[in-house]
Image (cartoon, rainbow, N blue to C red; front, side, top):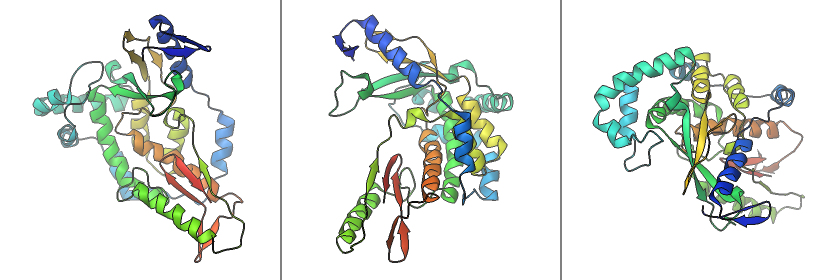
Length: 315
């Protein structure tokens, strides 16, 4: 990013660009939660599936040295590190020694609900969205470069969470779910369009696009979602620990901005993010299915919603 439109004026001034980026993302990641609205939403829900007792026990089980070694082994090579500069290659080279050390750090952090400061720091790099006006800051996607010691604990927790998702996520969600593909949703929409030509009932298809979907998830809402889906306190507190005191700065061609707090949003670049994001999306699906919208009845089955992560289609 070497130039940006701010207040209707195109600027190449590094200080102006830096300040504009800092203020935009500082505002984006500032919590805007209405506790009253959240309570009304959760009280309106019914027919909520919860995770099995076995998966609850798996999620609540302590992180082991073996978990850490497996996470390090699965780390991809030639990836940009966080701001500490320690690469995945470094962790792989010293895996045995570091696993024991990291295990002590993670267990103590979860017990105290507080990570070491270096694990809470992200470095956001901005990627232009294809075929968008890149002079507008809204058309850049923030990808967080996270320190690998943070990503390792996130990978350990993601492995646990992934095991439980099949208990609670509907088959109408194709995003980030094993065995699902984008073509499932495309084929379904095409079939419904073909079917609509054969019936006389009035019907519609509505496609929803969420503004800054990952970046607008309220942390407290996400933690409540863990409660309502039946996750135990130990796992929930582990997730809360990862998001406590989170902060970031933005990497630009001429330096980095000042640090700012991350009080909402799910870090794009975190191994946990995709799976955590499915929880509020599933609550949206439940809320819609509990509404007065009838949906489309085909061969005795009612279809009202499909999702590919945040890409939501209503019938």
